[in-house]
Amino acid sequence: MPKAEHLETTVSTKGQVILPRVIRQRLEWDAGTRLIVEETPDGVLLKRAPVFEPSEPKDVFGLVPFSGEPKSLDDMEAAVLAEVRRRHDAIEARQP
Image 1 (cartoon, rainbow, N blue to C red):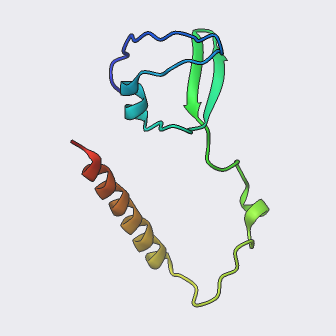
Image 2 (cartoon, one colour):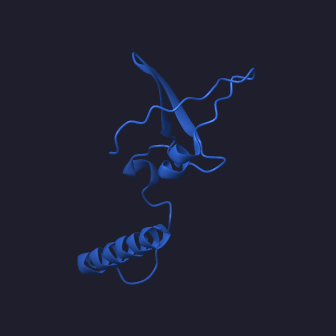
């Protein structure tokens, strides 16, 4: 993690705070990003809110029907590896 930066911002009359652009870009927090706000002994902590509510497999198992041949472990591992490579390539393409 990069060294902590000491940047300043101001609370507006509406209670709004503008996060510095460098922080928003580094965290990829675009307009509309939902954040969790936690009060801590040191101040306020902002974290990206999860896209989906936490769930247990028992709560969602069987909700999406599947027809066809079952996938082997090798097939699943290959699919996961392909997705990791795709995401890595997408990140690399964004780097200056």
